Amino acid sequence: MDDRYSASLYEIEIGIVVPALIYAPVWLADQRGFLRDEGLTVRLRSFGSTDGTTAALRDGVVPVTIGSPEGSVADALSGGDLRLVSGFVNRPPLSMIAQPRYHSMADLRGAKLGTTSLKEGTCHLMEKMMAAHGMHQPADFQFVMAGAHPQRWETLKAGTLDAAIQLVPFNCVAEETGFLNLGDVDE
Image (cartoon, rainbow, N blue to C red; front, side, top):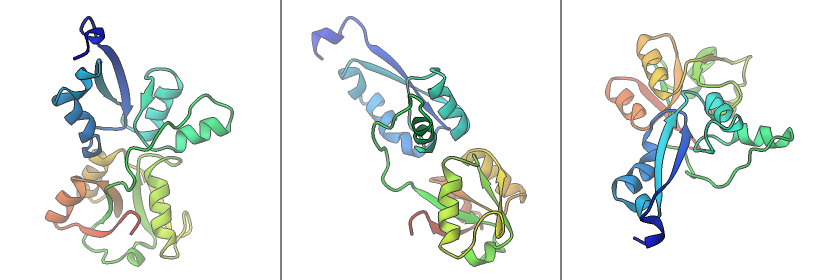
């Protein structure tokens, strides 16, 4: 390690929605000492929703976030200070998971779809998926605020949601327990 970093490490807190598999590169870099070798200590801080993560960034609670870009784009377009620096994933590892009674995307007409936000993240991905099957919100389906992936999984299991986009590994767990994967994002 370079001597200029030996006295102290630069600490940075990164805002995230919830701990998820997509942050594995950060965890791996930390565990393998790659961050320390660059003079960094990193802590991921969960804010539980995309809106909450964007608010934490905008309010200066954290200096950087890894999350969906919509909140930062909207802030910048309205004259705010938030900016996108880079992308973290090119294709999110997300799948539309549905109750076993739904066998196709077309079957979701009139369904309640779980999301963490009505203006960021998963709602836009679900809108795109549903539009590809000729359905639009609110005429053809309804969004339900159901939290991030762990909370949506619990709500799906409870039967109060018809479907929701789920992140790896929740999509795999859902399939193993009888829920149907109606398609991956960007399929």
